[in-house]
Length: 394
Image (cartoon, rainbow, N blue to C red; front, side, top):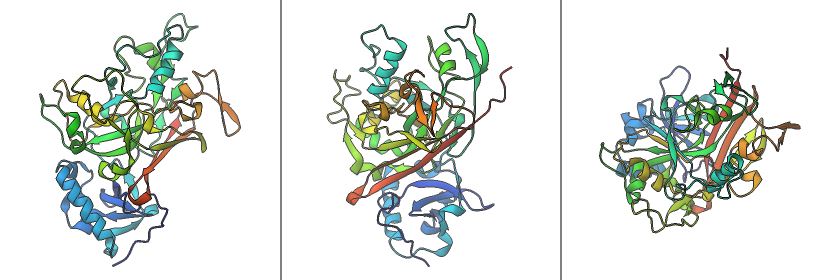
């Protein structure tokens, strides 16, 4: 038996206890939690076979009451001695995609981000937001199979693009490859076709939160998105962190959203719409270039989930809905490089070089922390990806 030491300032103390899927050597992937700099095997700790499986889906499907009970049991068990065979050093494990992703929807919930893109794309329009933006959470349906775990290399996508100087469309590798720093929310329990998730019940449906990078080929996106929206400019890859912070752990991080005016329609209306006080950091080749604040997001996660189901679309265990780019009011809080460099017109310094969009070999890492119980701070791990050259383009 052993006791796991945890530093007082650790982002992974007993107030966090995120879930992830790990393996050691050639062993099969299984569910664990992070405590300090160790990974605790939950199948061994709790003696429950649901944690000996290669994803969190079966556990998430057991529902809210089970999530509460398991979190309480883990907290009690790790406070004492733990079986030696349950404890693994963080450096000795390989982390895997934590869930089998069912469906994926990405929203556009930051007013600062939406307004900045409106000013970039429609400079002659005095109103940067589209008329629908403050009436509903705008989003698009993405490709679930292209969601990958942190550390997976990202191949530069190819596609059609048409620049201002191109007489006709051309095909080739994207030359305006970008990031979007976001949070992703995992649906734990789904709904049947025809049912909905009211805003008041979202807490019981959302299992946890991950970091999310919605890689974006802006040149491909710009040519394709009218009139039906993003497709190939988005569907090639999205990166998530391997650790899922339970929504239960984030109760102390809840904050009011910005004032929602006009008042949303009844299915979206909340007496106290809540966001999360999560501070993100974006590092480009090791240089911090932005600190996006999630607390600035206009639409609540509860409203996003209510909207995605209000038409009766089914939801499933393992669904992911992402927030859209997180941006604040200042330049150094913008969560996408198209904003940060104002469409490429205002480069930023990265390691002494003036840069606009991503080049082959670039690496981007997103990290974050939030307030937890008892004055602690909670970590989300990281979402990291490195850009590889395109494999096509002729």
